[in-house]
Length: 345
Image (cartoon, rainbow, N blue to C red; front, side, top):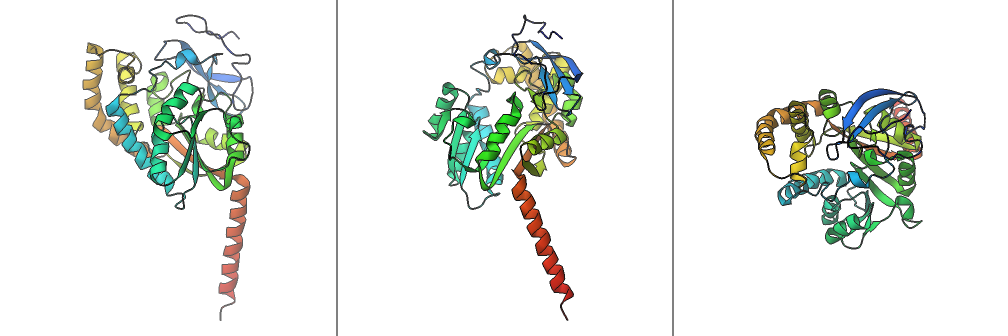
């Protein structure tokens, strides 16, 4: 099967670009036949693996450089301040998972907003990025503990109490390799936090191929709670908690996705906020419509969180052996308690 873009031209693809990135199977069924990259307008397909059920993007470009322009996620000062506040709230919740603190590694740390929040709470912070330019941006906030490398490039003995993959895993074409290395790098009792878009969410089903968080081809794998749990299980990690609340990105996703469906052009507001487009009547219309849509979007997002169908989901995972050992210990403790109660006069 030959898979090429319809606009603006042919996409150079990797060998085996249509195989499942999770299990390697070749058979799939189509979900969307024309999902457009909102930046380049290249056309991609989203398909579901017939073997493991994972959804993924095809074809997979040989190079993703043109899909990450210089302004990608380079938001202005106001948006950055809002995200900094919201990310700080999220980090506070994460930090409570380990009140004693410790070391945290963020894979794909961006400008370092989350790691800066961890450092303010006394954690030892480390970050890695995909290239030197991105790492240098983070170093302006975090200092020298951010480097451009892969997980495999870290010192052999490096271990972390917490590893964070915040909206990163969906960008990875070989997720099992990354997750295996993350699992290996967890210190005893360590936690992995993976936050990704929820492909089975209400928002995804409403917006279809116009869903803001589909974001092909940057998002190579599209996870559901089931496929996320199974993918983590493949590398020896057990999901201990799964949540769906995302004040940072869910209500805005409803707004942007609705505008995209009405206007027929994807991510008008996001393109403007990233500096890709100048202010125009189209942007003005989207801003006015977005302001009107935000209150119902906030309400709908909150309801979807309670229903387990939020647009973003967050898995907290632990080493499966440690989880099994903890389970056995809990069972033994419970048995001893019951035995003690039975022996009471």
